[in-house]
Image 1: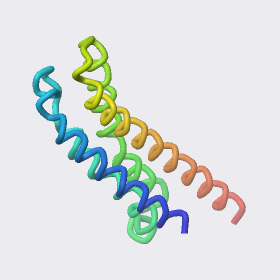
Image 2: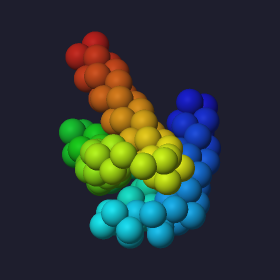
Image 3: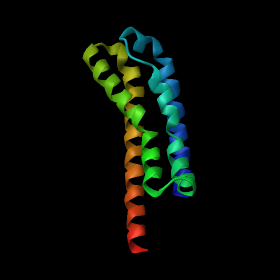
Image 4: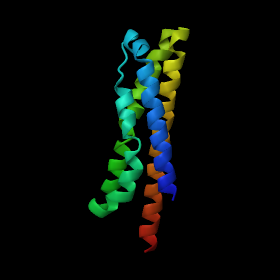
Length: 128
């Protein structure tokens, strides 16, 4: 049930980030920032899917590594864009910065989610 709720959450946030970044692509291009963050955000919903389906096809730790890689590209790209947009010092970047912050927060939440699920899986394996 939690996985379904998080799948919906990550799908909605992926859409919001994708639309927000594509809306502000002119500002990002003006300050020489990549718009690949929009496409990296499309990987967000795959994290819960990998955690649900992955244990049937992948070994135990590999499932969590693959799930974490669904969030890392957006996290790294958002961090780089955040630094560059903060250095501009203009008000024109506020909407772009808001979309980048959404991407950063969502990818960070995704990594925390994968880490918690990994710790719980290790705990269950230790008990059994």
